Image (cartoon, rainbow, N blue to C red; front, side):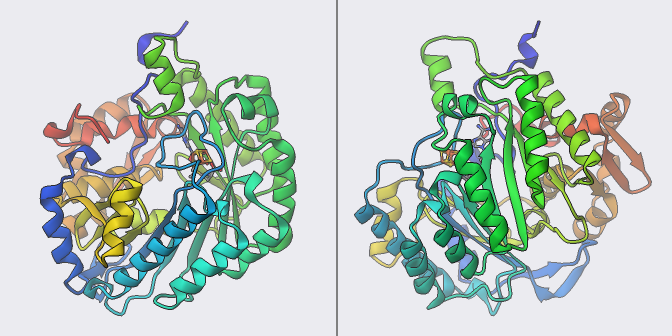
Length: 446
Ligand SMILES: C[S@@+](CC[C@H](N)C(=O)[O-])C[C@H]1O[C@@H](n2cnc3c(N)ncnc32)[C@H](O)[C@@H]1O
Ligand code: SF4
């Protein structure tokens, strides 16, 4: 029997930033414009000491196309655009990169990490990809980036396309497998079935990417214990360098959420204790197969080889130039998001203007909270880092919350080190809102 508190209700969300997106506004756009027109600020080392070097910089490119909208997906995606419109988008993105590359905030900084995200970057044909990258390379390069990630949906790949992706300099290829059972895949509206997963995985492993990742979701509609065990067994057989396992969320804008609200039906998604038990089982199985747990969502095969440059640098406050419709970025202490709709994104670019949509300059205390909650998702925090970077004693400041979590067996504290226990890791996102400022408790997140 589930209680209301344990059901996967509409309105759950994945915490990826702070303050909540609902607090960003048009009024703060002058802040981000001015940050972009100013040279970069100095950065910090891994222990939070200021260093005499500009802050690290990353680039995010949003490719918002998909073959089909999955019923659980909350991203800004388009499924009906024709080849001509895709070409218009690629041209707009190239213009945006050209404008961004000339901003004073770029300084002479190389990109430390680059992320082709979506939507589905692999939706683009090999020809469209090559043409996009040729246009981008006229203004920027990622030759010195330590990580270049590219997200793929299995059914969009072909062997030649996988080679094209490799030739673009991609070091980390991420395949959205989600589940290996055809009934579950089709029930959830995925555009691919298991034969496409296995075919594309062979092309990927044959191509020899430095780092291969598989995404899975715990709690797809129709999931059972028996099927989940099979998923984990088959994923271990595929032997990826890392696996990312999300617990199914139901933000307001998914097809399932609309169905639940509109037709007043019970949520079809397993409850939180079940999704956590599936994740816990998966972590145990991966550990038995030699993997290590690297965050609340990820396991890695070889800790000494795989680092998560995008995740770790972003969560330590590096700059991220966001390009593409609805993308989120952060420069010199200011958050911003691009225009969230096709027309409002493309039009300013056709006039040579950046398509900025909303922004927020967090206070230093809000930046501290942001880094603390994001880094907690890795399963560990070092209080010394926050002492050096923010002159803050995070253990003392949030003493009551830590005590409560400690008493509940969710964290352990030893000196300056705070670590999530396995029970804490399983519910990492639920542990974060108590650290929000009072004004942000209970406000809508997006
Ligand atoms: C941009 S997609 C990855 C690339 C490609 N679009 C695909 O789906 O294969 C990013 C990932 O978000 C996850 N995701 C999407 N909607 C989700 C939800 N409602 N709850 C949990 N994870 C979700 C999926 O695991 C998906 O692979
Ligand atoms: S999960 Fe991936 S393929 Fe499905 S709609 Fe979302 S972005 Fe597209």
